[in-house]
Image (cartoon, rainbow, N blue to C red):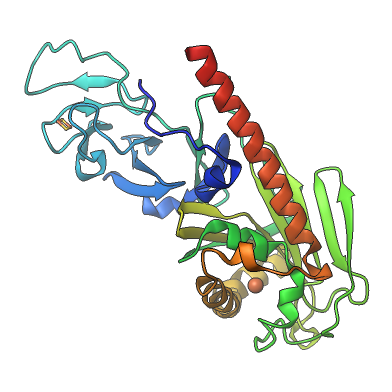
Length: 347
Ligand code: FES
Ligand SMILES: [Fe+2]
């Protein structure tokens, strides 16, 4: 299969549409059924469908015959049939039939590009490789997902901005006391922020030394190579609403250079009837409130111009933003080096 993407020449250019060699959340499980669905993620077009057994399949949304979008085709016997001339592919990208030309030599060849796809924790995830991987890493989640003690849901929505603005926002707990003060859950707390920073085993933590458990007072990174730079934050509920803590888990999925899929797992450490109450309250109370908060982020980020980074003046509150930018840049440089090495080896 020939390369379908021109190589980026700098870390900044690479980061416009995101790091590869990583799993990304791409959509909700209900978004994909037995008819093909075309999505753009990381600036790439992919097509997803479910076969007869409900198993997810994903290919590049490009027909190797003459380039039509496979997503305008149909699913037949679990395979995808291109709408243009009917060539059929299985989920591994192998041509299974060429109805216009029985006995064609294309049959049996792997001509379409497959994408590893999986369903986990209420979402569909796709591995976006760059061709330098020797194997697909297993998807890894923060421990709260698998401990059995936490329960929650994922909220998924689109923002009209580059994903790096969302990433910066997610490592910036100080903005909770300003941008979100008008909301029900982030109304409390002081304005002055004394931000501390510490490296941890899987990343780092930033926290306010002069306030904890009141607003967005602590955010930490858990980096799982191949499975994302997770931004995790504790979100306290007001005491008059029973108190307690929700924990947010997220990292942005680039759609293209100008749009981002923003997703947030909101989880609580609860068991028994308390868990049932939380799951009920989630739909009636948490979703609308969370939507309000996210709308404030969306509006603020949509207004940030493309060249803002070149003109910004950071404050001590931005220590988490600086560090996460650096970590992504280093990862982008590693990816560029791997791509250059591969190109050299091919020459
Ligand atoms: S372009 Fe797909 S079958 Fe011709
Ligand atoms: Fe926010």
